[in-house]
Length: 277
Image (cartoon, rainbow, N blue to C red; front, side, top):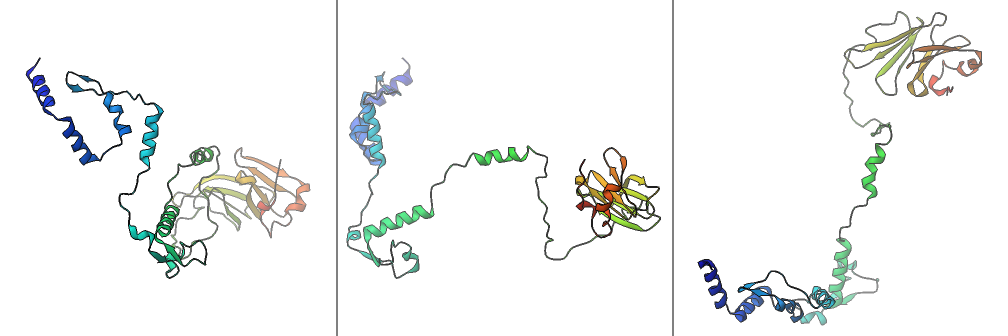
């Protein structure tokens, strides 16, 4: 047996259990006998207290803990039973009334109303709903843009900056009759009496030309994006219109049956026509 272990046994034998209990009661408060009973079965080995104990009371020990959770007030004011509070004199006290006829409350009832009002104004926090966690996954299932665009300009002054011409790489040699931006905001088409349709990628600096389509038999009076921006409709003073597919670069002439629908292109937009294949 080592010298350190011998000193530990001498110190433990000199400790008075009664004094230890009084010190614990002074520091932590006296505990009920029901809770102290399980600790009486602690096994002592070699003069050292065991770290594991067994609760032999079963459910009765749980009941004792539940009873202890309901703490009694540490101090009670005897005047609460006799005092009366006028709850109709001030605005902030009127919210404690359950009816307009109430004028005064007893001290105990006044305290209870204050507690209820505190719980109402400061409720306990609750767990977040799981539906909110699934919302980002729903947004990412489609290809639609995540941010919407406002159709109303913000109030105040608008700052403008002069940039290079959008058609600087191939200006029109005649009158330009149609200018329109793509719905994505990156492409710009120009068309006019020179029988040519030009599409530019506008960035304000380079403005690269993407495509040029020439129509030999029709000066263009109106042109616009159609079908979600994947096609361009070009019309003039003819009994037909041209349909340009931007993805395949295919140009198709739509014959007389469309003339009645495009005859008013000079006063309205081509986009209003719903072209379906």
